[in-house]
Amino acid sequence: MNIVDIINKKRVGEELTKEELEFAFNGYLEGIIKDYQMSALLMAICIEDMTKEEIFSLVDIFIKSGEVLDLSALPGVKVDKHSTGGIGDKITLIVGPIVASCGVIVPKMSGRGLGYTGGTIDKLESIKGFKTSLSTNEFIKSLKEVGLAITGQTSNLCPLDKVIYALRDVTGTTASIPLIATSIMSKKIAGGADKILIDIKCGNGALINTTPDAMRLKKIMEEIGEYYGKTTICEISDMNIPLGSNIGNSLEVIEAMDVLKGKQGKLTDLAIKISSEMISVAKDISFDDARCEVLKVLENESAYNKFLEFVKNQGGDINSLKVSDIKEEIKSIRSGEVKAINALNIGKLSCSLGAGRINKEDKIDYEVGIVLNKLVGDRVEYGDTLFTLYKNNNKEITLNVEDYYEIN
Image 1 (tube, rainbow, N blue to C red):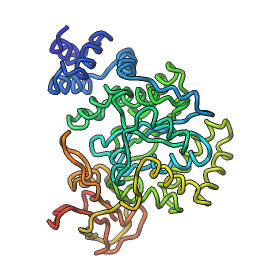
Image 2: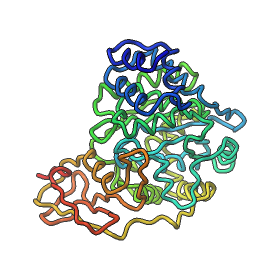
Image 3: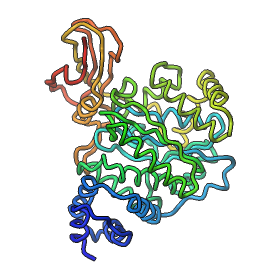
Image 4: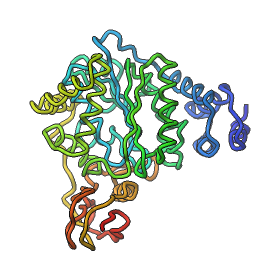
């Protein structure tokens, strides 16, 4: 086979065979296919899409590129949660401890930031010493001891997804529904959970922008889950405004801790909903009964203590968390009510500060980011601070406030 022929075949919209997909993707993992060739194939897939058969073949190739964890020795139903990504989405850091503190084991394989959306692994690495690459034995040991373990993709688990994920991040190929479904479901199946809950973010601050696309992704992932015998529940949630107030790695960990300590708002409401769904499906109880358990562990701070236990167990020093001392406040140029916040532009701004990657080799600055001082529905007076930038230098940033906030 010839990689150029495969690229051209997909470029004109033809269906690739499983053998052709194996040749291209396994060849890339082995270093035979070059970055620029795989980038061209990924872009052709983005433009020309993939059939259901191609997607199922690619998921199988991804899974078989590494080992599949067997967690059957652990008691009870194991439930994993995943988000397709959005601006300010730190839900995993909240939901994992909540569900684990209710007695449900949560095995989680997470990724780094993709496009302008943040990654759970990047956020956790803002905690000094936190180990985000666990061996299989370490992963299972953590699940036994804490009930929650979050790891990046090791060399043994879906290694193909790891290298493709990094390339998609910097080649404008993050928004392909087939590639999103393949990436998520291959990791979830390899991760060994019995049941999977996926939070599909939809809006201008997410990889999925429209409801029809979100519905298509939901259908594909549920079908993949069914094929592999994994109960897969997909929920669609809004991402036209940032999730919570903090955007940036250390800042988002801090906000997650605030929620676990009792902070109220839409972020908390969504975390409660997702946690309740996970517990309901794991324990085979009603949503209302599961929600009562969630509220109890939040109220008595069992969930917050579980977060601290989880961080310590994976080597993290929670007291090491810090944000930049260099701040710049962005003021309102009019009075009125906040009608909308542009999540995508906020995400781009955060990335430009250093909180995300533009190139594959870029290093993240964990201490920078944005805090939204005014949220949708808030009253604003002229000169009020709308949001605060946490920067790594004193250079003043020139921007148009109206690109970020709609006030009238």
